[in-house]
Length: 145
Length: 406
Ligand SMILES: Cc1ncc(COP(=O)(O)O)c(C=O)c1O
Image (cartoon, rainbow over all chains, first blue to last red; front, side):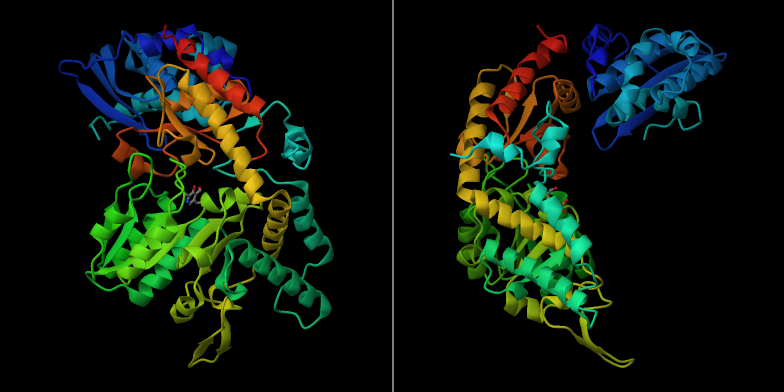
C-alpha cells in the first residue's frame, strides 16, 4: 500500500517545473491522449528529421504523475532515433507492469523513478499516458483528436 | 453517547485493517458481523428458491425474504410492503422507474426535470427514456450549498412536465434536500417526484409518507447491507398502473401463448430468481441500524463533520464544496486543493492510510457546472473516529508541501 516512494523530488520537480511543457511552433506530428475517467489530458508534439526526434513538447493538464511522466519521457527521447524511442517506450510500459529487468530499467534514466507505480494499479494509466500517446503518434495516428 | 470502540468490534474489516482510516463511506459502507452472518445463515439454513417450491424449505426462504421486505417498508415508513421492490441497487431502481413510468406517462414533447447535480445513475436513465419518447430533459441548477430551491423548481414546471427526479442528498455536496417541499411543488403541477435516496437513506431519517415522495431509490450496500441488493419504493396506486420493466419468471400470474396476466405487486417488478440472501442481509443491516438508532448515528456523523471542517478551515489552499455550515454536509466533505490534482491528493492520503475518493464521483455534469474537472471526497459514517478524522486532516495539511509548494 505504501506509495511514498514515487511522490519524490524527481516527480515533483518535473511536475512543477516541466522542461517540455509548452507548444512547439510548427510540430510535424501531434497527438492527443486522454484518460477519460480521471481527466488526464495531454497533447504530444514532436518534430522528426531523417528518423530522429529533433524536438518534442506537450501541453495539457492532469495529475502530477501523468504530467511528470510525459516530461521525463521527452527528456529521454529528444535527440534519439524513432526506433530507439519506441524501444524505450516498450521498456517503460513493461516496467510499469513489473516486467522489465533492472538492466533495462536503467536505460530509462529519471523515468525509472516511476517504477514503484507498478504497485498502485489505479495510477498505472496516469504513468503510461504520455508513452501510449508516443506509440500512437508513430503508429500513423498523428492527427489531433 | 455511543461506545465507538465497542461498535467498531462489530465490523470485522476494522480488525483486518487496524491502521486504515476508511473515509469512503459514500462509495460503500463496511458491513457488521451480523449482516455477514445473516447472509451466511440464509445459505446454510434456509436456502431454496423463494416462491417456487411446494415444500417447507422453499416456504422458509420465501418467509425470510418477505420478512426483509417488511423491515425495509418499516424503515422508510411505507404504507405497505407491496410498495417495496427489491432490485440490485439504486441504479437499477432508477432505470426501472425511468423505463416503466416513462412508458406509462411520457409522450413526445413532454418535459422531464432532473438536476445538474445528479449522479449519472439518476440522469442517464431519464435522458435515454426521453430520447426514446421524443421528450425533453430540463436541468435544475443547485444553489451553491447544493440545495434545490422549491421556488426555482416551481418556475420550471409547466403542463408539459411529467416527471421530476432529484437527489435527496447529493453525493458531492452532502446537502439534505427538503423532499417534502419539493414534492408539494411537483404535485401541484400534476407531475411525479422521484427521489434518489442512495445517500440520504443511510444518513438521515426517511419517511416516504410524510414527504409524500412518489418513488425513492436506494442501495443496500451504502447502509451496512450487502452489495447486490437495492430498493425501489413506489406508491401503490402508481406502481399498479405501470408496465413491467423486465419480464420472465415470477412476474406473471398466467401465461398462455396468446395472453399474459402479470403478477400483483411487488412481484410484477421482480422478474427472475430473487437475491434472497442480499435482501435478508439488508434486513439485518436495518435491525443493526435500529439497535444503534439513526438519530445517534446522525449526531456522530455531524460531530465528525464539524471536527473535519474546523480543521480544514485552518489549512490554506483547501476549499470545501457546498455549504459553510457543517450541518448541511451529512458526513460528506468534497474539496479541492489549489494546484494539486485530486488523484495525487487521494494517493498521498492513501500513503497515510486514509481511504478517500477522487475523480468526478459519477457526477461529471456537476463538475462541469462548477468549473472543476474533478475533486476529492471524504465521507464519514457513524463508526469513524475523531482520530481518523484528525489523521485525514493532518495528512491533508502536508500535501502541498509534499508536492513542492512552499
Ligand atoms: C447520490 C447517488 N445516487 C446513486 C448512486 C448509485 O448507487 P449504486 O451504484 O449503488 O447503484 C450513488 C452511489 O454511487 C449515489 O451516491
